[in-house]
Length: 81
Image (cartoon, rainbow, N blue to C red; front, side):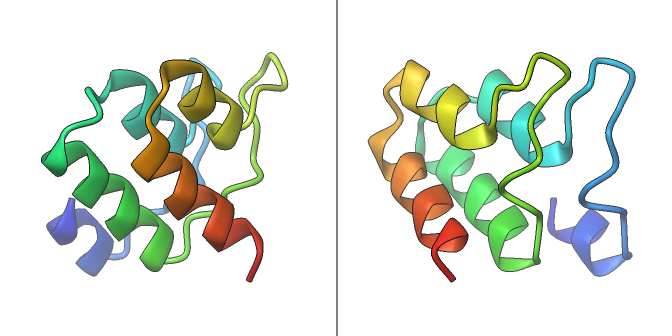
């Protein structure tokens, strides 16, 4: 992830599933340390935390539904900045 961020990859690009990189990281992750680090890297690099998927579900809502409390805190804190 770090190389993509450093290379200037568009963090808020919406793919053909209607997901941003942050939503994809949340949905495809497992809540473990690497998953947390990936989400933290995206948020710290400036990924927009309020962009919802095509169904209107935000990264925070996806995270909460999966019970990833550490990631909920990261996304919630970013949204409060």
